[in-house]
Amino acid sequence: MTNIKTAVLFFSRTGTSERIATKIADGLGISPIRITDDKNWNGIFGFIKGGYYASTNKSVNIKINGEYKEADQYVVISPLWAGKPTPAICEFLKQVPVNKVNLILTCNGSNIESAFTKYENTIGKLKGHFGIVKRLKDEDERIKDIIQAVK
Ligand SMILES: Cc1cc2nc3c(=O)[nH]c(=O)nc-3n(C[C@H](O)[C@H](O)[C@H](O)COP(=O)(O)O)c2cc1C
Image 1: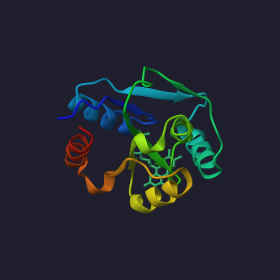
Image 2 (image 1 turned 135 degrees about the vertical axis):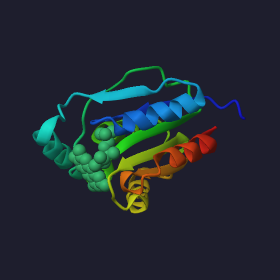
Image 3 (image 1 turned 180 degrees about the vertical axis):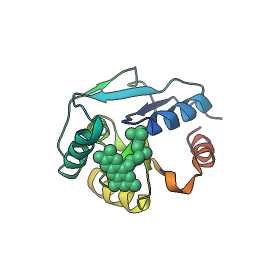
């Protein structure tokens, strides 16, 4: 095991990414940090607004609810919204070096690899990337692989 200092950060609308962030952070012996923004994404209107904000790259103001600046690497967990990380996570990724970020996207069933390729073409090469596709029902195996890879 290396002495690399890791911060786990997440945004979650309905709890999936929060659960995954908590399991990864537990595995690393640290606490996950929640990123919030200034929008209300609840309910059907929130869902529609989320799709609109994500697909038009609209920015949001974020709050990072913990200390992360001293980390050597980041493990960042986001839901996939309209093929992209959420607006709050896109904002966070403008504030840290992309090559220190392991990005984990959770989604229902999308082709996650093509989402990473498209996203890396705009922001640059990530340190690592991992998808958790709910349809595949392999969350705990994927989490084990992620913990192993970032340790
Ligand atoms: C606005 C919006 C857009 C979404 N777009 C996609 C998508 O393009 N592909 C997909 O597989 N899932 C999509 N989803 C589903 C979420 O990515 C998935 O349920 C995710 O795991 C939810 O994470 P959370 O519970 O942490 O909020 C979308 C959900 C929302 C709210």
